[in-house]
Length: 261
Image (cartoon, helix red, strand yellow):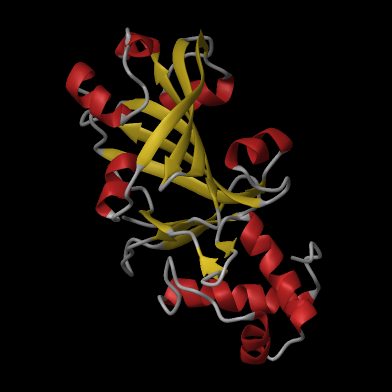
Protein backbone atom coordinates (compact mmCIF):
# COMPACT_ATOMS: atom_id res chain seq x y z
CA UNK A 1 0.00 0.00 0.00
CA UNK A 2 1.28 3.47 -0.90
CA UNK A 3 2.70 5.07 2.28
CA UNK A 4 1.61 8.62 1.37
CA UNK A 5 -1.21 10.02 3.52
CA UNK A 6 -2.43 12.25 0.69
CA UNK A 7 -4.07 15.67 0.91
CA UNK A 8 -7.51 17.06 1.76
CA UNK A 9 -9.37 14.72 -0.63
CA UNK A 10 -7.79 11.67 1.02
CA UNK A 11 -8.60 13.14 4.45
CA UNK A 12 -12.24 13.54 3.39
CA UNK A 13 -12.38 9.86 2.39
CA UNK A 14 -10.87 8.87 5.75
CA UNK A 15 -13.48 10.89 7.63
CA UNK A 16 -16.28 9.36 5.57
CA UNK A 17 -15.07 5.85 6.41
CA UNK A 18 -14.86 6.70 10.13
CA UNK A 19 -18.36 8.22 9.95
CA UNK A 20 -19.65 4.98 8.41
CA UNK A 21 -18.11 3.09 11.34
CA UNK A 22 -19.75 5.44 13.83
CA UNK A 23 -23.12 5.04 12.13
CA UNK A 24 -22.84 1.25 12.05
CA UNK A 25 -22.86 1.11 8.24
CA UNK A 26 -19.48 -0.59 8.49
CA UNK A 27 -18.85 -3.14 11.25
CA UNK A 28 -15.86 -5.15 12.47
CA UNK A 29 -15.11 -7.95 10.04
CA UNK A 30 -16.77 -6.22 7.07
CA UNK A 31 -14.85 -6.41 3.82
CA UNK A 32 -14.45 -3.19 1.90
CA UNK A 33 -14.66 -3.48 -1.86
CA UNK A 34 -11.75 -3.76 -4.22
CA UNK A 35 -9.63 -0.67 -4.85
CA UNK A 36 -11.55 -0.07 -8.06
CA UNK A 37 -14.92 -0.42 -6.34
CA UNK A 38 -13.96 1.83 -3.42
CA UNK A 39 -12.45 4.44 -5.75
CA UNK A 40 -15.72 4.54 -7.66
CA UNK A 41 -17.77 4.66 -4.44
CA UNK A 42 -15.85 7.67 -3.10
CA UNK A 43 -15.33 9.25 -6.55
CA UNK A 44 -11.54 9.46 -6.19
CA UNK A 45 -8.54 8.03 -7.97
CA UNK A 46 -7.09 4.73 -6.80
CA UNK A 47 -3.91 6.54 -5.74
CA UNK A 48 -5.93 8.92 -3.54
CA UNK A 49 -7.88 5.99 -2.11
CA UNK A 50 -4.66 4.18 -1.16
CA UNK A 51 -3.41 7.35 0.54
CA UNK A 52 -6.67 7.62 2.47
CA UNK A 53 -6.40 4.05 3.78
CA UNK A 54 -2.79 4.28 5.01
CA UNK A 55 -3.47 6.09 8.37
CA UNK A 56 -6.49 3.87 9.03
CA UNK A 57 -4.32 0.79 8.60
CA UNK A 58 -1.61 2.25 10.84
CA UNK A 59 -4.22 3.00 13.50
CA UNK A 60 -5.50 -0.57 13.45
CA UNK A 61 -8.91 0.27 11.99
CA UNK A 62 -8.27 -1.58 8.73
CA UNK A 63 -6.29 -4.68 7.91
CA UNK A 64 -5.13 -6.16 4.62
CA UNK A 65 -5.55 -9.89 4.05
CA UNK A 66 -3.96 -11.80 1.17
CA UNK A 67 -5.28 -14.76 -0.76
CA UNK A 68 -8.41 -15.49 -2.75
CA UNK A 69 -10.68 -14.30 0.09
CA UNK A 70 -8.39 -11.39 0.93
CA UNK A 71 -8.84 -7.66 0.65
CA UNK A 72 -9.26 -4.74 3.04
CA UNK A 73 -11.31 -5.43 6.17
CA UNK A 74 -12.62 -3.43 9.14
CA UNK A 75 -10.57 -4.53 12.12
CA UNK A 76 -11.31 -2.41 15.14
CA UNK A 77 -14.22 -1.86 17.51
CA UNK A 78 -14.80 1.57 19.05
CA UNK A 79 -15.11 1.60 22.83
CA UNK A 80 -17.93 3.78 24.12
CA UNK A 81 -17.19 5.51 27.40
CA UNK A 82 -19.59 7.67 29.38
CA UNK A 83 -18.15 10.95 30.57
CA UNK A 84 -17.40 10.88 34.32
CA UNK A 85 -18.64 7.30 34.66
CA UNK A 86 -18.10 5.62 38.02
CA UNK A 87 -17.33 2.09 36.84
CA UNK A 88 -13.87 0.85 35.94
CA UNK A 89 -12.69 0.28 32.37
CA UNK A 90 -12.82 -3.55 32.51
CA UNK A 91 -16.51 -3.40 33.47
CA UNK A 92 -17.22 -0.90 30.70
CA UNK A 93 -15.47 -3.13 28.13
CA UNK A 94 -17.35 -6.21 29.30
CA UNK A 95 -20.68 -4.36 29.05
CA UNK A 96 -19.72 -3.25 25.55
CA UNK A 97 -19.22 -6.84 24.39
CA UNK A 98 -15.45 -6.76 24.02
CA UNK A 99 -14.07 -10.28 24.07
CA UNK A 100 -10.77 -9.78 25.86
CA UNK A 101 -9.40 -7.16 28.23
CA UNK A 102 -6.11 -7.06 30.06
CA UNK A 103 -3.64 -4.64 31.60
CA UNK A 104 0.15 -4.54 31.60
CA UNK A 105 1.82 -2.73 34.49
CA UNK A 106 4.34 -0.25 33.10
CA UNK A 107 5.59 1.13 36.41
CA UNK A 108 4.76 1.52 40.10
CA UNK A 109 6.12 3.96 42.66
CA UNK A 110 5.87 5.27 46.20
CA UNK A 111 6.73 8.97 46.11
CA UNK A 112 5.79 12.40 47.32
CA UNK A 113 2.89 14.29 45.74
CA UNK A 114 3.62 17.16 43.41
CA UNK A 115 1.79 20.43 43.93
CA UNK A 116 -0.81 19.57 41.26
CA UNK A 117 -1.35 16.02 42.56
CA UNK A 118 -1.67 17.32 46.13
CA UNK A 119 -4.25 19.92 45.07
CA UNK A 120 -6.31 17.30 43.22
CA UNK A 121 -6.26 14.86 46.14
CA UNK A 122 -6.69 17.45 48.89
CA UNK A 123 -3.41 16.58 50.62
CA UNK A 124 -0.19 18.44 51.40
CA UNK A 125 2.58 18.54 48.78
CA UNK A 126 5.06 15.78 49.50
CA UNK A 127 2.40 13.44 50.95
CA UNK A 128 3.31 9.88 50.04
CA UNK A 129 1.35 8.55 47.06
CA UNK A 130 1.03 5.15 45.45
CA UNK A 131 1.37 5.59 41.67
CA UNK A 132 0.41 2.85 39.21
CA UNK A 133 0.89 3.25 35.46
CA UNK A 134 -0.64 0.62 33.18
CA UNK A 135 -1.19 -0.12 29.50
CA UNK A 136 -4.80 -1.25 28.89
CA UNK A 137 -5.90 -3.55 26.05
CA UNK A 138 -9.27 -4.29 24.45
CA UNK A 139 -9.73 -7.20 22.03
CA UNK A 140 -5.97 -7.64 21.93
CA UNK A 141 -5.16 -4.07 20.88
CA UNK A 142 -3.66 -1.31 23.09
CA UNK A 143 -6.38 1.15 24.10
CA UNK A 144 -5.00 3.49 26.76
CA UNK A 145 -2.17 4.40 29.11
CA UNK A 146 -3.51 5.04 32.62
CA UNK A 147 -1.58 6.60 35.50
CA UNK A 148 -3.45 6.47 38.83
CA UNK A 149 -2.39 8.21 42.06
CA UNK A 150 -3.67 7.26 45.52
CA UNK A 151 -2.81 8.59 49.01
CA UNK A 152 -0.62 5.82 50.43
CA UNK A 153 -2.28 5.87 53.85
CA UNK A 154 -5.62 4.90 52.26
CA UNK A 155 -4.21 1.97 50.23
CA UNK A 156 -1.33 0.78 52.45
CA UNK A 157 -0.42 -2.45 50.61
CA UNK A 158 -1.82 -1.78 47.14
CA UNK A 159 1.48 -2.56 45.39
CA UNK A 160 1.36 -6.06 46.86
CA UNK A 161 -1.99 -6.75 45.16
CA UNK A 162 -2.50 -8.16 41.62
CA UNK A 163 -2.69 -5.04 39.47
CA UNK A 164 -3.58 -6.61 36.13
CA UNK A 165 -7.35 -6.45 36.62
CA UNK A 166 -9.72 -3.83 37.94
CA UNK A 167 -8.18 -1.45 40.47
CA UNK A 168 -11.67 -0.31 41.46
CA UNK A 169 -12.52 -3.88 42.51
CA UNK A 170 -9.41 -4.02 44.68
CA UNK A 171 -10.20 -0.62 46.17
CA UNK A 172 -13.77 -1.68 46.99
CA UNK A 173 -13.01 -5.13 48.41
CA UNK A 174 -9.78 -4.45 50.29
CA UNK A 175 -10.05 -0.78 51.29
CA UNK A 176 -13.81 -0.12 51.17
CA UNK A 177 -13.18 2.72 48.72
CA UNK A 178 -15.89 3.26 46.12
CA UNK A 179 -16.27 6.22 43.75
CA UNK A 180 -19.45 8.16 44.50
CA UNK A 181 -18.55 11.28 42.53
CA UNK A 182 -16.09 11.76 39.71
CA UNK A 183 -14.85 14.91 37.99
CA UNK A 184 -13.09 14.60 34.63
CA UNK A 185 -11.32 17.01 32.34
CA UNK A 186 -10.80 16.02 28.70
CA UNK A 187 -8.63 17.51 25.97
CA UNK A 188 -6.79 16.42 22.82
CA UNK A 189 -3.01 16.00 22.90
CA UNK A 190 -0.39 14.49 20.59
CA UNK A 191 1.38 11.22 21.38
CA UNK A 192 5.04 11.57 22.28
CA UNK A 193 7.47 8.86 21.08
CA UNK A 194 7.18 6.78 24.26
CA UNK A 195 3.36 6.91 24.33
CA UNK A 196 3.23 6.14 20.61
CA UNK A 197 5.40 3.05 21.12
CA UNK A 198 3.18 1.78 23.94
CA UNK A 199 -0.03 2.36 21.97
CA UNK A 200 1.43 1.14 18.64
CA UNK A 201 0.60 4.34 16.74
CA UNK A 202 2.68 6.96 14.92
CA UNK A 203 4.23 9.76 16.97
CA UNK A 204 2.05 12.89 17.18
CA UNK A 205 -1.16 10.88 16.64
CA UNK A 206 -4.07 12.62 18.45
CA UNK A 207 -4.95 11.17 21.87
CA UNK A 208 -7.77 11.90 24.29
CA UNK A 209 -6.17 13.04 27.55
CA UNK A 210 -8.44 12.63 30.58
CA UNK A 211 -7.75 13.63 34.16
CA UNK A 212 -10.11 12.27 36.79
CA UNK A 213 -10.63 12.84 40.50
CA UNK A 214 -12.78 10.22 42.21
CA UNK A 215 -14.20 10.83 45.68
CA UNK A 216 -15.87 8.62 48.28
CA UNK A 217 -19.25 9.03 49.99
CA UNK A 218 -17.75 11.62 52.38
CA UNK A 219 -16.51 13.71 49.46
CA UNK A 220 -12.85 12.86 50.13
CA UNK A 221 -10.79 12.36 46.94
CA UNK A 222 -8.97 9.04 46.90
CA UNK A 223 -7.88 8.77 43.25
CA UNK A 224 -6.30 11.19 40.81
CA UNK A 225 -5.82 9.63 37.38
CA UNK A 226 -4.20 10.83 34.18
CA UNK A 227 -5.30 8.67 31.24
CA UNK A 228 -4.42 8.73 27.55
CA UNK A 229 -6.86 7.03 25.16
CA UNK A 230 -6.38 6.25 21.49
CA UNK A 231 -8.77 8.66 19.80
CA UNK A 232 -9.45 6.18 16.99
CA UNK A 233 -10.76 3.57 19.45
CA UNK A 234 -12.82 5.58 21.95
CA UNK A 235 -16.12 7.44 21.61
CA UNK A 236 -17.13 9.70 24.50
CA UNK A 237 -20.82 9.86 25.38
CA UNK A 238 -22.19 12.65 27.59
CA UNK A 239 -25.72 12.67 28.98
CA UNK A 240 -26.75 16.20 29.84
CA UNK A 241 -29.80 18.25 30.74
CA UNK A 242 -30.64 21.86 29.99
CA UNK A 243 -30.02 22.62 33.65
CA UNK A 244 -26.83 20.65 34.18
CA UNK A 245 -24.87 21.63 31.06
CA UNK A 246 -23.08 24.95 31.18
CA UNK A 247 -20.06 26.66 29.67
CA UNK A 248 -17.49 28.60 31.66
CA UNK A 249 -14.10 30.11 30.93
CA UNK A 250 -11.23 28.13 32.45
CA UNK A 251 -8.23 29.67 34.17
CA UNK A 252 -6.12 28.93 31.07
CA UNK A 253 -8.55 30.78 28.79
CA UNK A 254 -10.19 27.68 27.35
CA UNK A 255 -13.96 27.22 27.32
CA UNK A 256 -15.02 24.49 29.75
CA UNK A 257 -18.30 22.59 29.25
CA UNK A 258 -19.58 21.08 32.50
CA UNK A 259 -21.94 18.13 32.13
CA UNK A 260 -23.70 15.77 34.51
CA UNK A 261 -23.34 12.09 33.62
